[in-house]
Amino acid sequence: MLVQALRDALRYNEQLLTSETLRDRAHYQEYLMAVSQLYAEVKAQYKRIETAVGIALDDIV
Image (cartoon, rainbow, N blue to C red; front, top):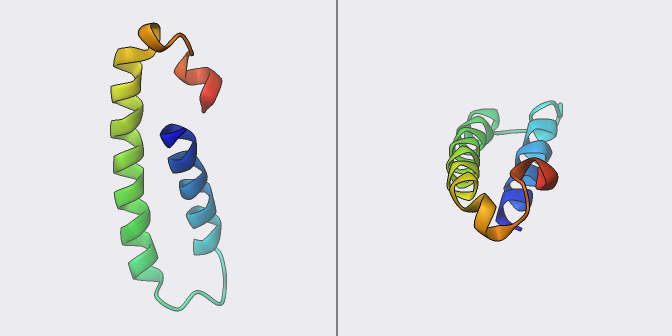
């Protein structure tokens, strides 16, 4: 679930960056970078336990 939530957060915030009404673009870019790094780390950790969980990472992202 965490992998999917982070994926959705990235998608939402990427779309938000294209909004013309966004006021603090730099703040959102910084936030997006942090979420992106967290997403990469969570995916890497999930990949390590993927076999034990029984659901491939590619099936949930």
